[in-house]
Amino acid sequence: MKHPLVSVIIPTFNRAWSLGRAIDSVLAQDYRPLELIVVDDGSTDETSRLLAPLAAKGRLRLLGQPNRGVSAARNAGLAAAQGSLLAFLDSDDEWLPGKLEAQVEFLEHHPEQGLVQTQERWYRGGRRVNPGRRHRKLAGDIFIPSLSLCLISPSAVMLRRELLDEAGLFDEDLPAAEDYDLWLRILARHPAGLIDRELVIRHGGRPDQLSARPALDRWRILALEKILRADLSPERRRAAEAELARRQAIYDAGLQKRSRPNT
Image (tube, rainbow, N blue to C red):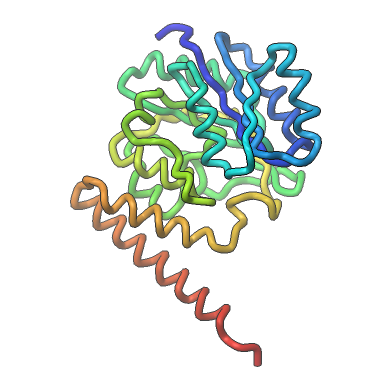
């Protein structure tokens, strides 16, 4: 397990303004061996001009594809990845020093754990904000708490490749909540490890982010319907059914509100 290859996958679409910062935060990590794979999901801005020199110098592996969405981009990176440990970074986020080293060390000392994440430092609109208590990352069996709130962040997690061999990849039919869907499939069988330190900077508060989409509940409903087709314990099944009913009621109420004529 000592010094395994870590494959880092950054999917990106029209984020040349933040992509360089994300890449720099990966290349500045002390941990080696490391491979960085950037998947350009059909960007039309300055992304290609930013990436081409870095790829030519061997600083990263560049994959390009027509715009197919973040799930397809991450899956393309996973197909090309050679590492036994996998990490993701959204192109508008960044890592703090020591993130990869801390996670590799954790997994080395906890062979029973399949994934580990870290706490995050949040910024919205360029200003630091404090995550609410319910957003703090948890350790252990977090399947039921994760039904109502996605408690794993792609930018903060590292996992063993075997977990994806077992659970499958990101669902390319989901335009949003694709991470919520995958984490539920994994957490149904595996506990989550946690390094209780802020080693990720998460930038939010912009309308272009998938989490800002108004129909997010629709995709989470589909993810819940999927997980209910899995082999769940009675307790987990009851919790998933209750969350599905709650989200369906919220979604239906929103549809009714939007369909009312203006008076």
